[in-house]
Length: 558
Image (cartoon, rainbow, N blue to C red):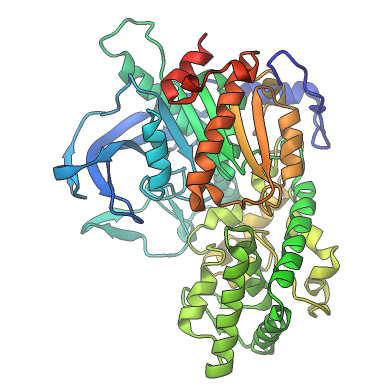
């Protein structure tokens, strides 16, 4: 579709329940320019990838930004950590020791891409996916990895661990321990509202404005600003589309894998789709693994038997195991090789029960990894809030509401497992999680307040997306149990300059698990998106225009 064509998908939806004047004012506020971030420190070092024997030269920058970008001048501030992968380190530079404190070392003559990790609540280590680094470095990019506010080395929101940690022997005082939060549930709930994708975008925009100032030093006053190419995976796509909504002039291009958000759809609408996909994934699992229906029931019935009458199966990291918590294993069905992983997990559980009469500590630790709410509190607390755009109303524990209507999850209503194969759920958040995960217990009050909140700030601007001119490449997955392909397709039809392909075989985590297959394909789609955004035939875009970032950007500027 060229930029001159009018999308067929209507822009208004069931979420459109606020007066137009109110929505316009809210969007005007959401789009207000933010102030440039303040650089706290910059460090240059080489770091080894966690998965292969490869080092990268990294410029780590710590910035200070407001908690509320549109608040008063004396508003509370937070810190945001951004790491730029400048190049692969070779030879004598292959060491993980910090070399020196330094000025910003980005080369502003080269394009800059920002990788937006999935989530919410995930940190963003720059060496976790060396294949992604290598691909985009080869294309001529320098790559920014920002730990979103509330995660990793940025202003981290942790639950109930010790309030001090040590990094390379240096004591680090953590900034916000939610268990010690003062002011009660209402203030905590209000505080947590500032950690969604709209403010993540403002943090990155504040960093971009700082870098633009660095670029213009010693040049003419009207120097061209730094622009970013966004690379969004899963929730990173939410962040990218919010960026496109608020600050499109700051962006060159956008690439998204499994992450086109269901804009204008309520959380309840989304979960009706993802529960259907998850149930279908369960059917496929049992078809591919004959006999595992019986294994799953034996394991779950053992868990049921050992969690009645006030008994608890204690988890190594705190909290306890119940049937409800165990069934989150279904999340693994949505990953590459997930069916084999689930079969293996069930086999290990049954082997423990048969030989030990219990689940071993190692197995329980594996179960803790199925959904890491203990480590990623925001993943649970904000799971439904990422869908609550202006006018969508309260999320209202949407996942649980939908699940209670489905026969496969009737145990939520009567406490009894239904006949037939056990049905696992995915990333869906239930009220009972706040009893079973140690780190969540003191957040129940705030979570209930957030579930009732009906005056959320805007996350997206549909009118701007309809007029969008930034080339967008998207690869989505037909059988994705996390991001519904049908709803993503509706967003695509309401957004110009987007080129999207739907894959029937890849899973949600393919960009990490099958980078060599996904990244070149996504780059080809981007070439098509660039051609479409210029209103030219795709065959008119020469192969040379797709070889690297510079030539593709030159095509955009024609």
